[in-house]
View (tube, rainbow, N blue to C red):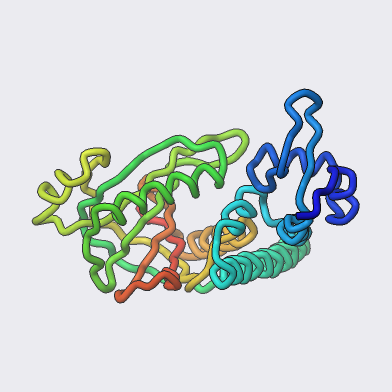
Length: 275
């Protein structure tokens, strides 16, 4: 195996020594050897392919945590992951363009509803929930991932037309506000106590029947720009209809129709309960 110094490897990989040290710390790219006395790092030429892939992934602004996950995947799965990531990037760009247009129209006195708003009645339902304060959307995502993992370990059957997940925002998540947010799973009321016993780490509660205004977003990840546009559409609709929000908390509702496969994507609604 051809052995390269960190300087040689840096030149051939187009990654700076600073980047190589960072990637070593994060476990993305380990040197072949590190001299215990001098700290001198060396690499094998065979590692150049991995190094160049990391550089490419960073060029498309893939976060380092996701780079690590992608590198652990087989090539077909990694390709799907990157395609899904870039689809989200393009969706965010489109949403930011729409949001800019909305702001321009608003300043010109031409407020408009960007999304179609509908209403529905939600019956009283039993929910298994986990409530937590979060600092940002990344922490929210991590909390949701852990919540879903609970039901993967101890599955409950999906019911067609019933949400498998409801993410309720009881407060704003930002640099100045930590929510809280609540992840919930609806369960049949007559079986709620028995099901709750299988998940002692979750809280069982009953949400009252209510009417809610909602926007159906389809199979997508809601970006920050979309959040603002959907919220603006709901506010405009509420003002026109003279309806006030309730204190139940705005929420994202996720539907997954069986059969569910690894490539399945849920249908998402953004909803605001009404008083």
